[in-house]
Amino acid sequence: MRCHPRSRWTEHVIEFKDVSKIYGKVKALDDVTFTVGPGSVTGFLGPNGAGKSTALRILLGLARASSGSATVLGLPYAELARPGLRIGALLDAGAQHPGRTGREVLTLGAMTLGLPRARVGEVLDLVGLTERESRRTVRGYSLGMRQRLGIAHALLGAPEVLVLDEPANGLDPQGIHWMRRLLRDLADAGCAVLLSSHLLHEVEQVADRVVMIGRGRVLAQGTIGELSRNGGLEQTFLALTAHADRSPGAHTGPGVEASRGAGPGRDA
Amino acid sequence: MSRAVHHPDDITEAGPSPATKDDAMTRETVTPETMTPETMTADTPIPFHRLLVVEARKLVDTRSGTIIALIMVGLVVASVVARGAVVGPKLQTLAGTAAVALGTLLPVLGILTVTGEWSHRTALTTFVLEPRRHRVLAAKCLPPLLVAVVLSLFAMLVAVPATAVTAAVRDMPAVWEVRPLGLLGWTGVNVLSAAAGLALGTLFLNAPAAIVIFLSTPVLWAVVGRLGPAGEALAEWLDLNTTSTPLVSGAVSWSEGARLATSAAFWIVLPMAAGLVRVLRKEVT
Image 1 (cartoon, chains in turn blue, green):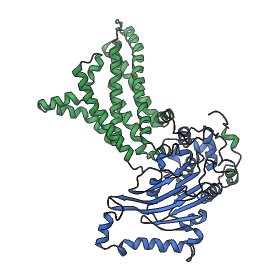
Image 2: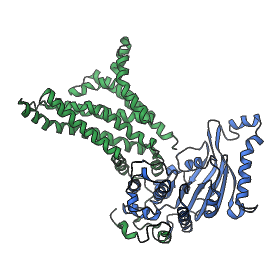
Image 3: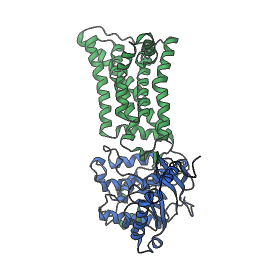
Image 4: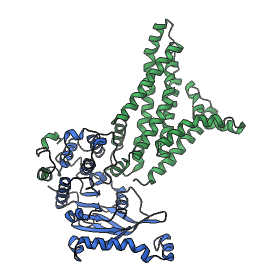
């Protein structure tokens, strides 16, 4: 098995550089900076509402950063000629037309990317959806099946970069075990995998590196080993996220709130 | 495309349970067997014709899509045949009757086509595969316009046997004369109404809102037209239904053409331009 030799990337396959996102007065992302290298699984860990999905949407060109830049393979996503062949993404397994069959969803993807139809059968096998299941409409799929379908779609183009938002949601224990193996093997073959999760143990079991995020800020990043030093990953995570939760009250007087609204140091 | 294609069954060797197929899976299929260097070109954009084929397929690959298609075909046939029973065997009149059904259905089709991905949130997947959103929008708009042309031709085809049968059944002489320019203009009216639906749908990106606005326009013009000379002039220049009527006669005067262009700009060009900006900027969630 190999990850595609198209990749000549030695360091930053994914790069977030000072990415901020402001919705009205809410700062969803605040100077997010981190990189993901090839041949590794990076866990993007944070509580619900921490800004993980927003960051991934910006990375994939579905939302604009208010400031800063996010690049994949050295370019903003929208500037890649045919990104589906290099980057596989699963952002929301629930975002499917309920009346379409799983096979049809994959066929549309394969057609768009110019892949032979037989690739559909391959990715179905890969994620363990049977021929019969693939001919049912997505309406009747369990969340776990939708996740598998979404992962199959992400793998269509045999990408060298995978971006997955909470992919383990709804998977049963076997499914989670299966996905862990899949991501591990892809990373060992040279792919860069970025997966977000709010579940610490899930990330701990599969990731090489972890980027912890809370309230839109990167709280810590490093290898599992580095982040586990002070009594384990969980302790680090709880301590950091608790701090992040308290921080607005702790750091903000009325004056700070106002300066935040004005976007300190980065707006024109 | 046909090279190196294996039947999916050739690749399946592991058992059905995902838990037991781990080993087989990762060793064999993550590296795609069906992909050739040619199909793996990531350096060229997706050709537009392929986006077009995919977007056209999305119109009919669900049950609701098929039902809409059947309803349109059914209503065209029903309206042509029913008109024949009432007014007698006149070819052009019978074909033209289909416009009553098409005038409502084509805009609704247009609206559903451009709003569907936003209501089902499949835009998330579509725009990840093709981040140049304007290309996707263009590929979405062409099939409904083509459907307008095809259904217009279909109505003319249905009108031929309908005229013959009506003539035979009612024992009347059939009127076969048609004004080719009139039929062309009539097809144009149908294309314009599909385009107006596409533009409204793109502007609102919300099917119920766009459909309600579209359906309430006749009422709007009825009211505006009664608001004195100014209102009358407004309705004369902006009501696409009225301004496109001269097309059906096949002869459009300069002033009629100017009114048609004005109303088309108001109902098609402006909302489509504003809608395009929205589509390009909107955050996909």
